[in-house]
Image 1: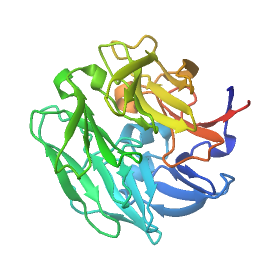
Image 2: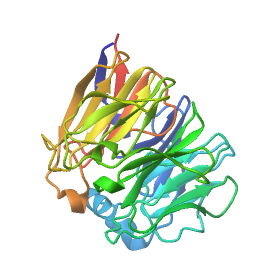
Image 3: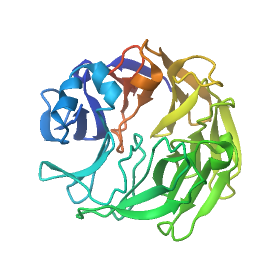
Length: 344
C-alpha cells in the first residue's frame, strides 16, 4: 500500500475538527463551521463567547497561539448537539447557540481527540492542567440534553499530574483513561462501569505514558509520550495485555488515527531530552506491523512554551475511509491542512 500527501488549499486557516462522509465540522479561532464536502464557503453555525480583547488579539496567528484561542474538540452527538471544548471552556452547541456547561470545578483544558463518547451518547473527559502542586484531578461526564457536567471520578492529590485523555473502546465497551507524567503517575486505567470500579492495565514508568490510543478488533495500539526514554509504538494484546514493540519513533507521540488497516501516529516537536530531532512527524504502521516515517515538519521559530509545541493532529470522527486529513500547529507550514490518500 502506498500513499500520497498533498496540501488542502481550501482549508488554510481552518481546522477540520470532525470528519465523516457528508459531514465535516471546522473551526477558526472561536468560530465553528460545517460543510458537506469541504468546498468553501463554509457555513458558520456558532461561536464560543469570548472577551473582545481576546478576539482582537487573536486576529493574529501569534495572538491565537499565545492565548490558546482555539477549539480543541467538537463531537456531534446523536441528539443533534455538539460537544465543544475551547481553551479552558467546555460547552454545548445547541440550536446554533453555544452554551457553557455548568459544573466545571475550575477552568481546564482538554487535549485534542481526548473526549470519549460511549454507546449511550455520554461524553467523558479529564482535566489537563499543569498541576505542579499535584492536587486532585477529575474526570467529568456529560449526559446529552443536560446543561451541566458531573464529576465522575477523582484521582487523589499526589497520585497523578494530569489526565491526557479518555478513550472509548467500541469493541469491548471499556472506557480507557491515560494519565501522566512522572514514572509513578504514568498509567493506563480502564473501566466498564463509569469508574465505580477500575482496572490498571499498566503503570509505573514512561512506557505507560500515553496521550492517545487506537483500537482494533484484535489489539490496542499506543505510542509513548516519554521525555527521558526513547519513544516507541506498542501493540497491546486484548486478552493478556502483553505488549509488543512495533518500533521506535523520533519523538513524543500525542495523536493517532486509524484508517482501515492502516494506523497513523504523530510525534511532537517539543525538544524533549529523548527527542532525536526537533520535528513533528507522521508515522505509519501497516497491516503487517511495519513502521515507517511518512513526513516530517521542522519546529518553527516561535517559542515552544509560549506559542505551543509543534504538533500534527487529526480530526475526530470515523473519517471517510479514502483519505485522512491532518492539521499543523507550531511547525513550518503552521495553520495549514493536508490530506493523506491511498494511491495503490
